[in-house]
Image (spheres, rainbow, N blue to C red):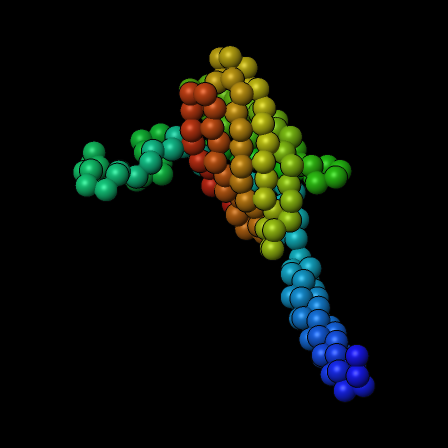
Length: 162
């Protein structure tokens, strides 16, 4: 290889390294901004309501009446207490009344996502209460919303700080 080719190759490699460093700095800046978003403390008392989920009508279908789609007839009051455990685990105790008093304590995994905590959990509430339920949800400083489903039931909840 002649000297001119070696110099050209060296210049290309230096330019590539400089561009690579620039991209790395830009990526680092992006991730530094994401890390700077504080994960909220979602522990504490929450209150709100829950209801059975009713999907919106399919295109062309006429809904039965003018009821709210997400919370048809049965929208019930619910309280919740969230406690942070170790290693991204949380314990949520949901309680209220639905024909009779109920109180369920669910262990959930939580992971930070921007300014929120994303939750997921599963628990067997027993045969008379619907069996195994799965939960997913999102909580931030002001709101804790979620979706639950089991073999027989599907619903949503929306809670705010007490």
